[in-house]
Image 1 (cartoon, rainbow, N blue to C red):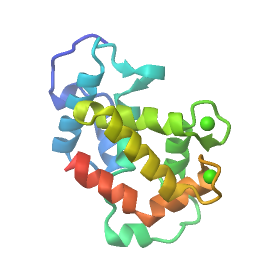
Image 2 (tube, rainbow, N blue to C red; image 1 turned 90 degrees about the vertical axis):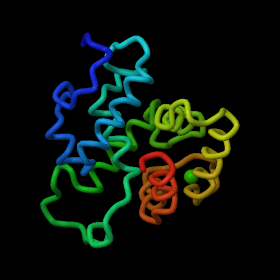
Image 3 (tube, helix red, strand yellow; image 1 turned 180 degrees about the horizontal axis):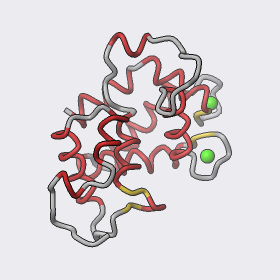
Image 4 (cartoon, protein in one colour; image 1 turned 30 degrees about the horizontal axis):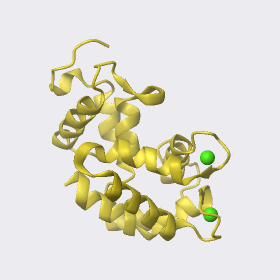
Length: 168
Ligand code: CA
Ligand code: CA
């Protein structure tokens, strides 16, 4: 993975697949690719723990607003690979770095930092992290289980706030 400066869509790996899977428009993808490159300071093509651009944008896709009718769609029987549930599982695993089945505060903060990049201060990041945990943590263990993760995203409040703030 060489080239560091190009922002042509043709240079983005798996562009078509990303578009289909995430529903981002080409211009959003381009903008996010820009941000990815800003985070990938050494031009390695991936962020910490081998998070490459396709992975990065899939994480962010969970923070995209979901159209009304789609979010209400009941569980389809043969679950498509890019179903909401599978996407959530995939995202959850990315947050849950130590694979203990829970997203801890430091784990969440790390992903949030990666997503919001340089736009926020540490203090703001901590408060976003705390708010996110407060909203999601139902059993009060100060960590987010997959079930809690799913439910909190279903409520959409975080998702929408994040979308508006960072992706619009
Ligand atoms: Ca964990
Ligand atoms: Ca919990």
